[in-house]
Image 1 (cartoon, helix red, strand yellow):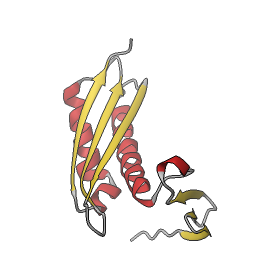
Image 2: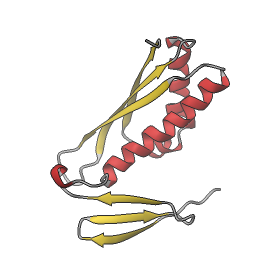
Image 3: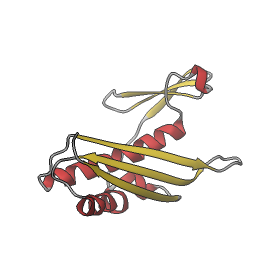
Image 4: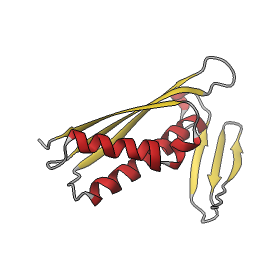
Length: 138
């Protein structure tokens, strides 16, 4: 078993900093959108899910020797109206720009990334859906 940890320290009423043992920091805030300087904890959860899935998908496409000109994952979470305002649904939209990839193989890679290899996705309980698109370079 592998163990990970971070320490979260309060900087101000709505500002926090998370630090891992290696000293890497992530700023967190709970301000309204017009005052926002950092992501909220719930936005960080979406970022972690998108980042984890992206790394796995990109590594698999590179293993298939596909050219990656650009790669993005847009992650959208729908939250419960009550308290706690947890995610009831999460949708990730993967876009790959590649001259030599196709939809079928990319779809299989995305499915493996989300359903099998992404530790963050495996740690979540809500329904997670995804879509994918391969674009040819312009």
